[in-house]
Amino acid sequence: MLFNLRWFGWLPLLLLLQSCGSAPSFLPTAPDSPTVVSVQQGKASYYGARHHGRKTASGEPFNKNALTAAHKTLPFGSRVRVTNLNNHKSVIVRINDRGPYTRGRIIDLSEQAAREINMIRAGVARVKVERLQ
Image (cartoon, rainbow, N blue to C red):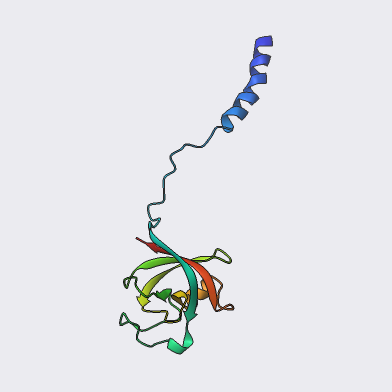
């Protein structure tokens, strides 16, 4: 009987130690997680109602409610993650236009994309732009 009490006294300690073990070093990535190809930082602005319906440089009509953007050099159809560095909110957009044409800006977002990263009120925000594969 004394042996059984000693064993059961150690059992909670053993269980506690086992639960404190580290996680396995292999952590699988999600199969749909995008790979970052390149990164830029700078200022973003947005364009909306005034351009809604007009033809973009790619030939498609601009839709202020779509998650699209204009970039000076990235190929049309490229997907980029834009992160507002002031609040760390991000959105993934598709490049379908050229611009911005204002000095010091690296990307122009659609109105909806700007809304998703909460930069409508400011109009311009410091962002990180990550090109995704």
